[in-house]
Length: 237
Image 1: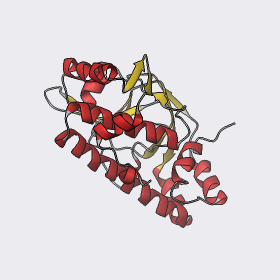
Image 2 (image 1 turned 90 degrees about the horizontal axis):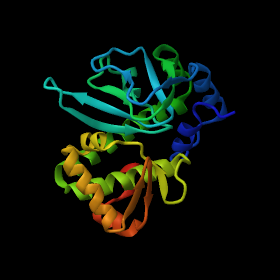
Image 3 (image 1 turned 120 degrees about the horizontal axis):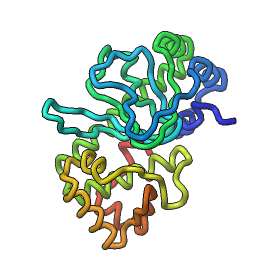
Image 4 (image 1 turned 90 degrees about the vertical axis):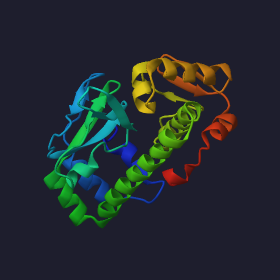
């Protein structure tokens, strides 16, 4: 039986090892898995969580909703990601977290989680690393959305998600799961649904990707990465 923190440990091992006793300590404070159906809100915007949520399976998005109802997905999370580790330090959420696929999560109450960080220096460093890593991804998304064309931004998103899925053992060769609708993709890229669909079709027509149902296959990594100006440095490779 797999541990709820297996993917997290695999992600961290790209940087350093977590000692077995420290891994066991975190596992001991994780609550039994919860399931969320696609479209279900996992954490409400402006909520004050008393626990942090770790993705075990599925894809979730951080979502900011404006007063006029407009939405922007500001991050995508896969297995091995804490969607709100920052809630251990920040009192109030400025965004919601929504299941973009059928998801399984495990949660850790903030009190016991803080004790793990206090008693195991490896986790104190790892939590800091995860928060810094998260910030690096946000910085790259700002550049992606603010300075790149829509085609390049989508290409970058595909390159990033494939790399992140591979790092936690979820990519199969050049393919990985991306269960986004055209509306959700538009909310990630800050485009209209029509424009987002055109971007997808252009990359398909150029033979760069194949996207069937919820499965993306990269057909030409070199050309896709060149279009995206993709560099894995921000992912700590």
